[in-house]
Image 1: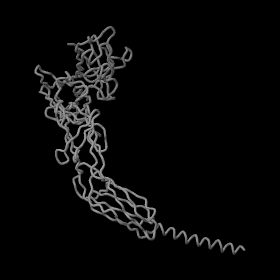
Image 2: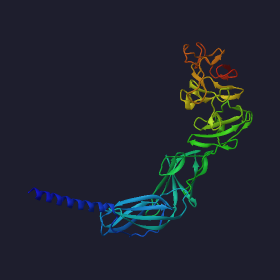
Image 3: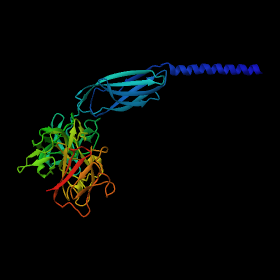
Image 4: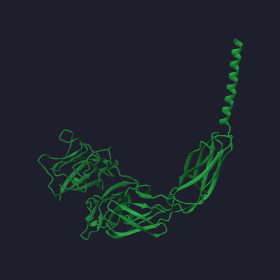
Length: 445
């Protein structure tokens, strides 16, 4: 009886071992005969199409797994569609043809890859002609109104209307052909991208009749205000800010171009002298500066630079001095107080000879009765002027020592004193004797 049971167990083990070998062989070796037939021949399509296809797939020996439709631009696979194929038969699907900028009409490769469960594959490739869709028109969509953009050239569209100086909207392209898709173009990271409805900040020097244009090949659009400082172009940071980094010479004429309402802008008296005829000259020491145009507050933020970075105070007293704290802000403290936000730190104008200056008007760019700011070595936390580093003999502003109502180095207004509303005050920091022996003077005019 025992021998009989042993024989049965041995036989069962042998059958199991054979079965396991067959199972392993099924997945270890690529076997079968997968076949694919394209039943909807494709020879041409537009960029932006959802390209429809139908294939017949079969394998007479092994079950199928997937069929993949892959689109290649040259050797780059740009998109793929995967369909599960549980059994032989016909399968239909779509593959998106990307609408990319700067890609001209040309040929692409559509590849079908059929795979069975043993991972054996068969492939078929077809060349197709791709073209930029010829949109009959585009639509500029703004919050209040939509404008038809007519075709004015190959891939070029324009809407010429009586526009305000600033127009915000996105651009919509209609569906072209049976497999086409409607598309939107919007503002992403300061450029126009497909698939966004974020408003594009078009801007012109003046309101009136002018064209808003868009090219569906290059994604280039206009108009955007081009602002120049002494002939150097500002680069856009966002909808309300642009900057330029430039060498400026003390006493030399400074020319801004591209801002139609420049006469309405606040001109910082620390950095610019404005003549009776409106011309400007630079007051700071000769050197490199970052000038940021703030279109919302309508003023130019000027910051000293060393190389490609914002300047810092050096051990020899050269470089830059910054203000961080409360009760001060340009052009108005009410709308743009620095506070303890280091991004808003104010750069004192470097006059040369280790002297730095800031000009403020009481009740406008500085509070009349309450200030609490201090001088720093950089635009941010780090080196700063403590209470023992600064002395002053003026009779309005005092330097905090941590016990007199202000933290060490912070400036305050003396008890019973005020800055006279509407009066201009000049704060000058003299580091001639060293960074630890700064002398602060406060004068009025």
